[in-house]
Image (cartoon, each protein chain N blue to C red):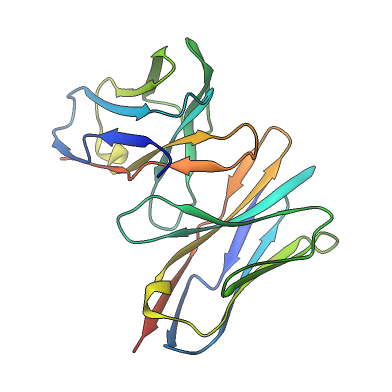
Length: 112
Length: 110
């Protein structure tokens, strides 16, 4: 296993509530990513990080924010969840040597 | 616009049969192409990586091909097993961009 864990794995929440998803790695990789996966779409990049406190937006960043205060943790926050953010969220880390992405097991979020 | 298209969207085959999945892309400038396998409820796992100069690469019963001129790749699965039931995702990288296909959902039936 690549040493990447996501929490929580499942969450049901109501519209308008804040939600934070956590990604934790034990590999000391610089690059970390948050994707969402929806039926009929490929994985779409929300935000990524290239180091502590260094983050940037992906193609579907509206409504999401991220933080990376430590190398091992990358947090994804939905400040006010909407039903359109119901999805499965995947965190990934990238091996700089091979460029391969290693994914977490996913966090299924349902916004009612 | 950088895009990755996969076909078919879904496929059902009998155990022991072969199948081929397709990936067409418009990502430029091309850096590499990976095929990932995603089991239901799990994260994707890399199967193969191909760079511009490679046109065939095997990983057990999985063989990926790449035609950089036509911007097409295929993933051939030989002697399918029930455990091959999964989604297969094509991922194409440009220098500063990475694009995911929507995947092909493969079901292998006994």
